[in-house]
Image (cartoon, rainbow, N blue to C red; front, top):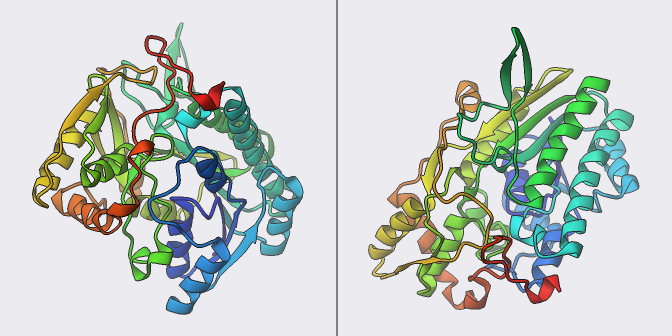
Length: 393
């Protein structure tokens, strides 16, 4: 099918574009390099410098014979958004085009406003581009498991039946984001649900857990095709950070007690889940919500696994419990349903020593590029330990 990937330059967007092209889809990507810009502004550049989208697409085509059509444009600009929809007439759109960092969103007012405006306006423009230019287009939107927070009851898959005074109704599961970024994702879901109800859109909202990994079959073809792999405190996910810290000889920074539990998944499974969502689209008038993760771990468990895997490489790394910069529970109940994707055929790549070894093997090649100044947390919104950074003043 013809598919637009918005945010096609990102850690998830670029591997998704290659994966879908390799699977036979006609792929168009759009990005305005916002994440690269924010990374430069905050001294949070990726481990491996990546070519621009046009050069990446040319390299991919030279190696595979497959074309990815590139549009450089801003998803918060309605003219840019409608231009690509009119030209492509897509069957589906994969929407990654958002500021993706919880810590960045909490740096101060300017970062908060950028996050709020960018994320909500991009989603709003996707809705209206579909309504005006491609009304049958299936919207696949990347949400986050962080929308749910850490409630003291089981987390259902998007919806929950409420029984009240003898009557029953189904509602969106109650949500409580732990940062402004997560709150914008909650607002995205509400916005999409409104337009599904009002205009009979077809939407799949993916509640994704933190992703780890750097290797995919397409990315492994050439260094120019590797994803934007961040290891810093703003844009790096926890397991990716730990792998780089181990290689750099920096103690693993466990925030607080380390009992924070989340659902995680391999980058390969993000690609698989998105493809499954596209192959099995939501119905008209449906907001389908799928919890997108494969395993749950505490931060302590992840740190211990990295220590064990690093030892096999002759790397001795310590674990350092530091003051938690985030406002979150460090010990809590966590049991989330994730039956939707297995029912669609997901075959997960679970976290084991071979996965960690592959990540370590790649990062070791670029050890000289690691900047330890990017590792320790520079932003805090924990009421007990709050310290304003230079960027938030």
